[in-house]
Each structure stands twice: as structure tokens, then as C-alpha cells.
Length: 420
Image (cartoon, rainbow, N blue to C red; front, side, top):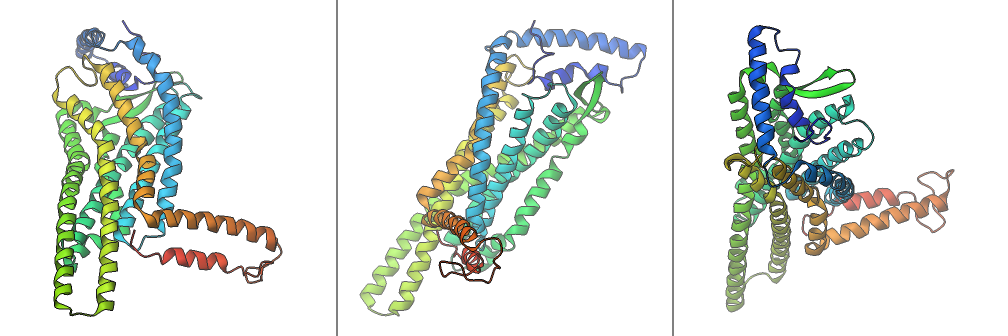
């Protein structure tokens, strides 16, 4: 039989085995009978898990390299999340940029939490106070909340672009998703955290032995298991499956809307050429605005489609665990499910890295913003070296520029137009 007690990744499994050791369990004859029955059920469950495609020994040997790779990928993800957020902060006057920036911030927080938890596994015991608390409250609760908030924000970005390109003359419909995007982003994150509060009432961390901590189901969970299961599935559907499905449908709708938009533009251009009427300057201005909207929509389409593509494997894995017999946690293919879950989680952490290169390829404004950020930092370093610590902000530097250069640069960053 596999030794589960020393596995750093089997806290959830140990949690179910330690239910009867909880201080909430009454010391009575009935509880002893229940204890014996559940011990028998536990032994049967372990025997079933040992019959899976992946053995416990192989899974344990897989964990160590996986944790090292996870630390590296999470570190890269945090760096690229910061870069993406900084670039779109300069274009925050556009609602789509605020939503994308919210996606980057949420993904960055999720990667940072996972990075902290995985690094702590090399430093503290798996059943220590910090290890268990950080896993359940930092990684599982907050990490799940911000990650699903990112999925919802990606759907909002696609929805805003769809209305902007499909109904360009109807400002009312577009304004619903463009009104106060920063508040909308913050509201989505807060609502996601509130929706996942059931995790706080489902499990609790307690001291099960001297210097040994574990997460055990609460008395409320044991008395109402069906209610928690229904609530968990409802939250998962609203914050995970529904936004992913909406994003996928909107991506297809954006492709159709772009084709229709191009056809309408060609028809208008042909009609204007035949009639020879209209203001050339006004037509040129409208064409520039239309091109900017089109390029922005193409970027959002590439961004959203890449995001959904990298999030789908985990959604498929979760769906299979829900509906396929024998596949999932505490099932015959327990270790297979855990292995696939960890591999799909690596894809999730690689999302922001991939999105950075997608935006770099598709967006001229993105490349210009990166160049501007690099130039601003280099100029600041040169100004500090040339002006010295004794010079004030208003003094003239040795190269003839003033200390107001940084403020002017920041103002220019704030006034970047919403085109891509």
C-alpha cells in the first residue's frame, strides 16, 4: 500500500483520512462504529487507487521535477504579467486595456501565490503550520478566486470589442461595457472572492498532532455535504465554464463581425468613389479611426483566443473528473488525474508569457509602449547620473534637458490613444 503520510501533494487525501481524528468528533459508541466503518471504506479506496494507470511511486518521482519547473514558470509568469500590466496601464483610457490589465494582474497574483507555496515546500515541512495555511488559504482560496476573475475579465474584454465592432454607431450598447471599466474590474475580482467563500466554510486547518497541521472538513461540511457540492458546481459553472464558453462564442462572433465590417468598408469606399462626393479630410479621419478600431479588435481576438486555448485543457480535465467514472480525486485514476491537473496548471501559468508575445506580434502600439518604457528608464538613469543628488527637479541637467522630463513622459504615456 502506498505511504500517503509523507507526500507533500496528498494533503487533500490525508484530509479525508483524518476526518475522524478531528476534535469535533464525539467520543461515543456510535462514533466508534462509524470510525470502524470509515476505516474499512478508506482501505478499500486506497486499494482501488493502487489499481490505476499511474502508480504512487511514479507520481512521487514526478513531483520533484514538476515543482522545480513550476517555480521557474511561475517566476517568468510574474515578470511578464508586470510587463503586460505596465504597457496597458499607459492605454487605460480604453475599456479593453483596463480589462486586459485586470487579466494580467489576476494572473500575476495567481502565479505569485503558487510560486510562494512551491518555494515553501523546499524550506518547511509539508505538514507545518505555514505549509498547510498557505496551501489552503493563499493558493486554493485566493488563487482560485483571482484566476477565475481573470477568466471573467477576458470574457468582458471580448464582449466590449464585439459591441464596438458590431454596433459602431450605437454608443448606448457599447457604453454599458465601457462605462467605469476600472470599477467593473475591481467588482469582478471582489465578487469572485465572495463567491468562493464556501471554501472557507468547507475546510478548516487545525493541529492534529504536535507540530503537525492538516486541513479537515468542518462540521458544517459533514452535516451538509450535498449543499456544498451544489454550491461548488454552481460557482464553478458561473465563474469558470460560462465565461470560457462566452469567450469562445464571442471569438467566433468577432471573426464574423470583422468580415462584415471589412465588407461594409469596401462598399462605402466604392460608393464614395463612384459619386465623387464627400469631404476628403473627413473621410480620411473616419478611415483612420476605423483602422484603429479594427486593429484593436484583431488584438483582442488574438489575446482572448490564446487565453481560452490555454485555459481549455484544465476545463476539459475538470469536466472529465466530474462525469467520467473512475477518473478524479479519490477515484481509481487518482494519480492520473493529479498528474494531468499539474500539467494543465503549467499551461495556465504560461498564459501571460504567451500573451506577451502575441501582443508584441499583433500590436504596434504594444511594441512602441515597450520601447517607450525602456527609453524612459534609461533617460531617468542618465538624468540621475548627470544631475546628481543635490540638484532639484526644476534645474537644468548637463545635457540641456530639465528635471520635468519624467513628468512630461508620464503625461505622454497617459495620453496614448486607444488604437493598437
